[in-house]
Image (cartoon, rainbow, N blue to C red; front, top):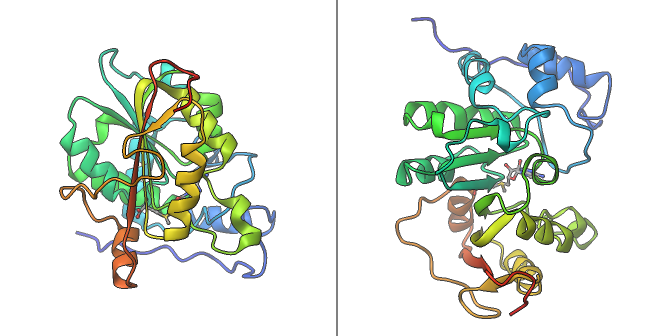
Length: 271
Ligand SMILES: C[S@@+](CC[C@H](N)C(=O)[O-])C[C@H]1O[C@@H](n2cnc3c(N)ncnc32)[C@H](O)[C@@H]1O
């Protein structure tokens, strides 16, 4: 068997934003050798996001992406209605799934669910696709590298999701970067609009200040009820997997906090 090689990108100027730079972007993409058609369908978008999108993928990962995304990828022009989701399947989305630790566990634990995995970092998508395939659960997932804001706004209809999970979102600790955090007032309202009445939002963070930020926003979002009571956190589910970023928090001496909200069946009513 041929050893799996790591594709190294050609020179990319480290001081530019390679996502926006028309010189470096083709070099990065060229290094990955995914076809333009593939990129147009699954990766490229005009929406501004923060955080890395591109990085190393191995030839083996690239082959798996090319095999699976045409089957389970949620391309830019699709909606969940086009995604061949069984009518009776609960639909749960994980936003920012990283390398897929939690997504694999969800898919394994809930064989009747369809999981929508949303992650902007291509090497994370590549790792997760490999793990999902190895765990033989990939066909019950739909995967996209498009940003969650785009996916929720354009590809999910109102009251279509049974649940949304956001684990350890990027903390953007500097005050001037707080507007980059994914949990914002508008985004919280968008999530609620896409949930069915009775649907859940579960979040985790190993950064105390970010956990409080998320709790403050979600506690104040109309239509959501914090199941731990206002300002409350839930206990860690002892059976949940330790994701990469929860593990990093532990190594660095931080304790994670967990939040669990339900969309009120009497929508619009704030608790
Ligand atoms: C700190 S990592 C956490 C990864 C994983 N959930 C975990 O617990 O290990 C945050 C992830 O969110 C992703 N992300 C950031 N903004 C995003 C967006 N707008 N849409 C989807 N994913 C996003 C990042 O690429 C990154 O992989």
